[in-house]
Length: 195
Image 1 (cartoon, rainbow, N blue to C red):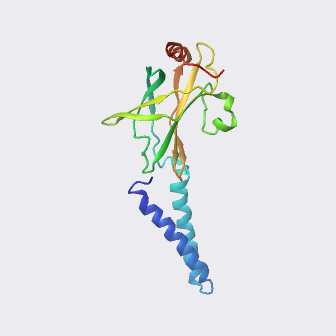
Image 2: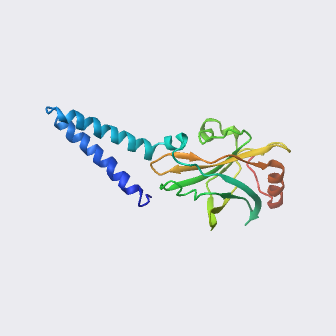
Image 3: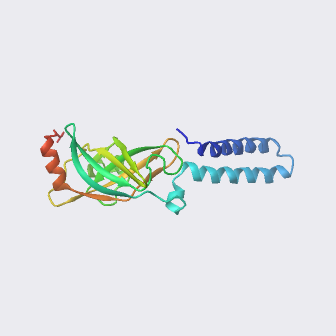
């Protein structure tokens, strides 16, 4: 799922790889080493830009920010509404899968799902764009509980993770949700929890 802009970059990466193979075959010529060095450098730069999340960490790509709107019930499910300043599914000319993670720790990361599963309270793979008004993208995420909701007066810190198909994993800023209001909504829909 590539956008039109991503196709030239894919072509350049493949062309650099082919040039690298040609240069390996022409090693007996002195100019082949310069050609080899240039093709490897270009390949590494394009690979680093399009397949890793380095551009996001260096500030080359401005990461989207989200704001919490509300919790509501839809079809006996608790749904979190939030607003983003960019289209999360295609903010850097890549296609992304969206996940919403929530934890009682402010520094939630995507790898916490695997490394610290006991710290993850919310995990949602059902994040959908509902409306787009000018530069505001309104999303809804169905909340699935992975662990018990923390005690009253604590907050659950949530973040949206954007995973590329063959590319990087980006993340938004952290938003907080009151665990008290979440528990009220869960009681309202009488959601059965596995705990």
